[in-house]
Image (cartoon, rainbow, N blue to C red; front, side):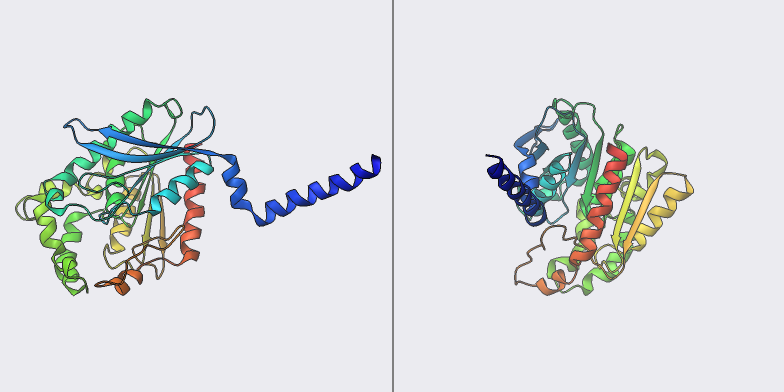
Length: 317
């Protein structure tokens, strides 16, 4: 028996070592997460569907809400919130007004009905609902948004009390500046629908900047800096053709002038789309190669993911 035990224990130790080295993702999965589909009902009766994933255990856990951009949820949100759950956070992603759950393009006719003005209020309602869940309760919450979702996340930092931190990825910070830039730059893009981006913004706002400058300022985080009450992480690709990097620099300068806590991470030669776990699929249609050229390298995306996790662990745990 002594001889048998002597041979078995080293084998078991070797097996575990190999599992650690070769199958780390399997160990992460073994740690366990729980998935839940949620429906949030807004004050006006609008229903927003979401996907929540959390660590196994009683909690309570800090939470991160991921906001998609104007292209829709896609599928990458599943990898992101699962990664968050495996690292000790509740992860939530939901489809904003007029966007299909788990899908892509929104109903533009609906989207133009002032819906963008309701996104922050919707987010506030979602947060209040999350607070009712026993595995979140009064735990710290961070909002992380990409592109249009990044702009909403920045606005949330000034309009929603109780947030611990906000992360914005390539988000608009000043609609007045962006509109003036888009009038000349978007018509140059190789996708027909992008050529009319400035006109579509006028439809959403219901007026041009000259006609209602206050409405444009109301949706511009740079004009709400005085009200910001949490730490901001600003992320931008230096070569982003859809939201110029000057939006990030000017927002950071405004935060600095008012002594607001922030981090700024600008990645040289990167475009508009991070690829944390997999590259977005733009198909083979009009402008697909142009869109693909805006996808961040995996090296930059993984570096950013590391910075995001350091940020979350510092401010939420």
